[in-house]
Length: 137
Image (cartoon, rainbow, N blue to C red):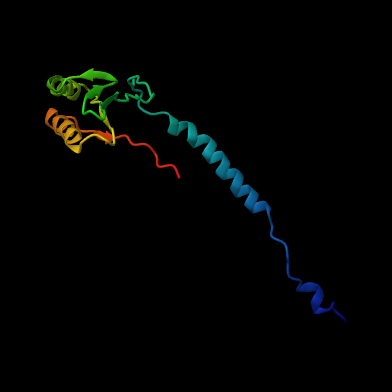
């Protein structure tokens, strides 16, 4: 009596059985389909309405020019030394506070520019900048 060779009965399966994996995935899918609508129901509240637009309130720019003779100009309008401090105090009281851009002639004495800066500081202006020409080669 010859029985079959041992190679015929002890073959190893080289493939994964996909049926149990598909069954588990279908059960998980059904569970998620049932639980997601339940999670969406929550306490009903009436939320306030608000706009999501960014408010872009740019401060205006106050240009102070000192010419070669030492005269002051605010936004290209001539101004006396006595009127400079009150104008800067008015600008410092604005909300948002304007930026002060100082343009000084290269031939003017530094003393005139320093006086304008000191007046701006005493008046309460916080943002002071200098305007220069770019150096061209």
